[in-house]
Length: 297
Ligand SMILES: *[C@@H]1O[C@H](CO)[C@@H](O)[C@H](O)[C@H]1NC(C)=O
Ligand SMILES: *[C@@H]1O[C@H](CO)[C@@H](O)[C@H](O)[C@H]1NC(C)=O
Image 1 (cartoon, rainbow, N blue to C red):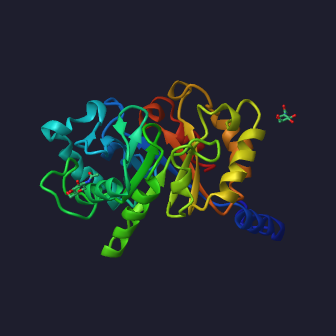
Image 2 (spheres, rainbow, N blue to C red; image 1 turned 135 degrees about the horizontal axis):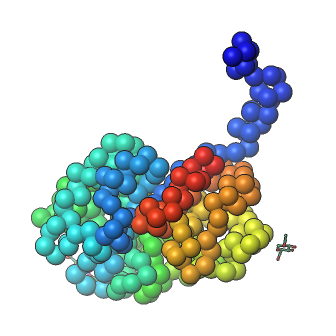
């Protein structure tokens, strides 16, 4: 081996500095919970591919309904068999992975009928999944890092109040992170008002099933929408939300090489860039999409 093979030339070093100054490293957030054949939480976290794991979904809440969680074939909350994931959540957290519970989803019955209802739901979430106490904790005593809003049906009202009440629990010690999964058209019908509070730490925008702002063989619409999100929406970090397989969404799948070579280099210039969100662990397991993009995220 040549003695100086690892020496940077001044020009290489300058290019390196330029790259560091204008590009931001991100993480990969993954939704887990809607397919019993996607492996456990511990297996998901042991891959080392993900920085955020979002457990989906609590899909019944609000308006005096008894809340319900649905984790597909993983376990049955009504027989308390989901508590087995408590130690797995702690295992993920010990690796530095943030674990959130997603409320909402595409199928369910949820709505916030009033500010008081939003307050009651926030109390329920705090006691049942966060730092509070309850005799009924479907995920056991693990304290989740936060709550993700994937609101796609029901009333559009009062989610800004739920966000405010949940963030209010931060003063009790451990930080409560807030995530949101709006659709890419701005403003999001269900979450637009809540996002304007500026209280959300991670906004993983769904750039799929949304032809006006997704990739369609041409990156123009997606990049222009991304620029509006990063300029106009006051969130701490914004993630590019994508399907991990063509079968994972009706439209909007981006081949990994296009994402890595054409899109990520452009969107990473924003200081608000947080990384890529993938739907879902099940599809990522089929395609290895996260592995294909991890060097570029
Ligand atoms: C909120 O909780 C309080 C206390 O449990 C209860 O009295 C009230 O009816 C609840 N309101 C709604 C809208 O669920
Ligand atoms: C991409 O779309 C934009 C806007 O619709 C258009 O102006 C541009 O020519 C397209 N680029 C390519 C390479 O097709």
